[in-house]
Length: 266
Length: 266
Image (cartoon, rainbow over all chains, first blue to last red; front, top):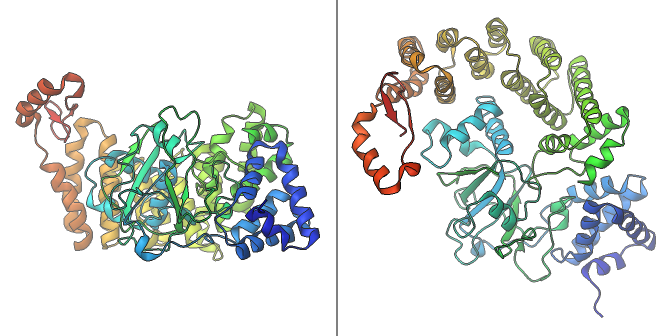
């Protein structure tokens, strides 16, 4: 039987590292969130062998330094972001989208404004202008806001990459969370859609376990050859929503933002 | 979530350590998306904690702010998250410590501008509000950087005085756009019978403001002055109500300028 990519990566590490990693993953079994992270590491397919070995090697080095296992994993992940396969420029979807909590995006708008707006003001403005015309002044500040923190998770419509990815998803809060696998999203969500070229065409990568760190709702896609990842719709998923394409990109401002934007309450 | 259970078992000292680690993204938190700001996960988690543990968490937050205020510096990524938490904490003692720190900014050269802006934003967003005198002293520290936040601070307690402050605003596009948005938010909170007076008072000071600044605020003034009463749209409203039913008919709000009339929501 063919070894998994995890087993192949472990095989190139010194035996002490392998033992330490396996012991750490075994210790996570009793914790529902961390056991899922451990399972994701074992199921990972998006990293090439050398990068997977480097990630696990960093993990083992941190463990050997006496760092707690969760901290060790997080430290290793932070040194190995965006190592999944990069999507060739010609294959990049022209329109991308994401859902994030309204509070988090209000923070981004405030931060991007450089002290012109506070987070609470930004939140009120986003609520006021959701779904309708945006005041030109708000438009300017919104375009300065990062689309995410450090790493932007994005989806797109694989059948028609030039269209709004939310057009073929349910409009309800529950439906969006189910389709995108957002497990703790009882918060108000903002749906952001942007032009990839308009935002400077940052590199797009297939997500990996390192990008997800300890987020328990990430799932590696089984097909190692797939150009992008897929979300894992949340159970019970009564509507049978399909997994949605998933990519990551570096923190980028919202210059290519498409308006109007939408806000969805739980 | 497992994290809530484990935090409930911690001593106060351990909770403080946990909070520090959590704000740096080193603890499992109920995040809406993998990149969500950690403090929003802490806020979500604290709702599930036992009351004594929650108290201990807020005490830890207060202690961390006290340390920051005493030392006058700290790690920016951590402080941004901690200040985000403070906005939700709404603790007068914590706010007072931050206000005192802000008044000492000129003596703290090692404190970055980003953190200074985050402290001032927190003071704008978190009750109890600071008096206009506090904000006029802040404005004197750095008129270019702090003008927008000082304007927000005064608008919250004394809109008439805030209007007089407009003449001291930097003559930039950014400043004008921010002021227009803040005035619009302030206008929303005014009693209908005070709104016309508010807009007129802003219009009157614009002659004494810089040209670029006045241009952006003037657009807002013109938009408010050109609002139309509802009877112009009454035919359309009746037609919509007839076609869609009363539930779907446009909502009617109080007039923006003339309290005795009613105005269709645009």
